[in-house]
Length: 234
Image 1 (cartoon, rainbow, N blue to C red):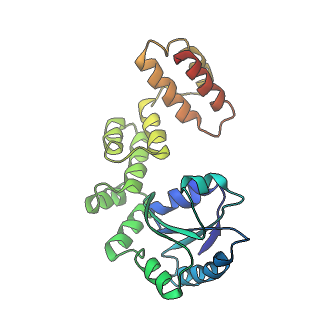
Image 2 (image 1 turned 90 degrees about the horizontal axis):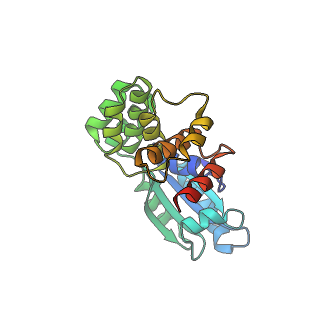
C-alpha cells in the first residue's frame, strides 16, 4: 500500500497509523534523480508485503514541516516507523535486495500480528488481552483509556496513560479524564472565566489546559486562547 502524505495528514496517516501498521516514510522530490530510481523499488517491495507494511511518500518541496521534523540532510531519505517511533532508516538510493531486507525487518511477528488484531478489535476485553501481551503498547493503552473515560473510570484511565510517553493522543484522553462531567456546551465560557485565575492557581491552569485539549487544536479559537494564557502567565 502506498499513500501520498502532506504536512497536514502526516500525524494521522503516519504517526497514528504506525501504532497498528509499520510505515515506511519516503522523503523525495521531483528533481531528485536517485529518488526516481528508489521510489519504484520501495513501492514494489512494500506492495509485496500484502498490507503488512505501508509506504508513505512525502514530497519535501511541498511539505517542509515533515522534512524539518526528520532533520533531512539529503534525499532520498527513508525512515521506518512503528508505534509512533522511528526504528530504522537510510539515506540515498539502495538496490532491491537491500530495500527488501529493510522492509522485511518491519513485517510483524506472529505476536505482533496478534496484538494488531486485538487493538483493531477495540473492545475492552481485546484491549486488556493486548496489554497482557505487551503492557506498554501505546495504541492499546490509549484506546482502553478512552473506553474507561467514556464510562467514568477516570482513575484507571489516567494510571494507564502514565505508563507511556506523552503524545497528542495521551494528552487528549487525559484531559477528557480530568474534566469528565465538567465540560459542556459552555466550554468557551469556562475558558474565559479561568483566564483570570491561571496565574496564581495551579488547579485552574491545569483545568484551562485540559479544556483546551478537549476543545481541540483544530478549533479556530484555540490559538487565541493559547496566546491569552501566555499573556497571563508571562
